[in-house]
Image (cartoon, rainbow, N blue to C red; front, side, top):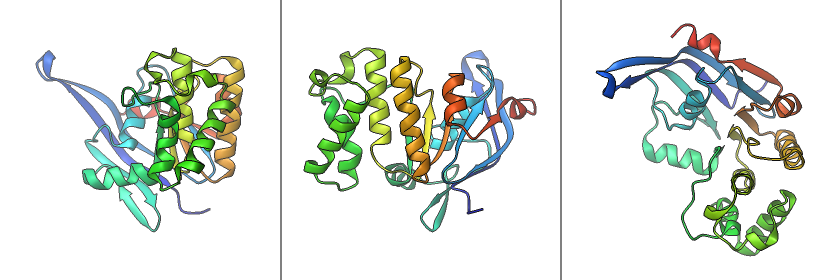
Length: 233
């Protein structure tokens, strides 16, 4: 088997509740797992088990108390847990994508430009990036009349489709997904299942939270039970 794209080893995280006299809330302890090209792995467990926290640790939004998070970036292994901010920004720009539950973008930027932006950041010319963005928004059934509008006023499902399109339009070897179909109807959930399948066939490694059991069974190769990490915390 090829070298993993993601290796997490010995991860531990505790939140300190400063408004509760410094009370400590353990989240995970000794979390270890790896992810290879072309596979989709789900973080499983009940609400509060630490799934979102683990995903945020891998992306670098949460620092860890102990352990390492190694992401393969070309010929280099980058430890997200210890990477300098500039190195982490570069890793996110070219190697590690993220589809969150909620769309956070610059106000007054059109949905079309929001989706095309990752391609433009990769150096793709606008005359190629914009048609690709239109095609992906069309595939996700976002009405064309919305494309020139800022997505801040869209419905939750419309915003999520913009978010998915933005996260999937450019190639990233590692993709993190936090409940990507939570606000979608059955037809659009199926489109996302197809898009994830295409990413897997292109060799992308996907780590995600999929509460929808049908979606999870359709796209995931295995499930990591996060509660086993919480038991040690």
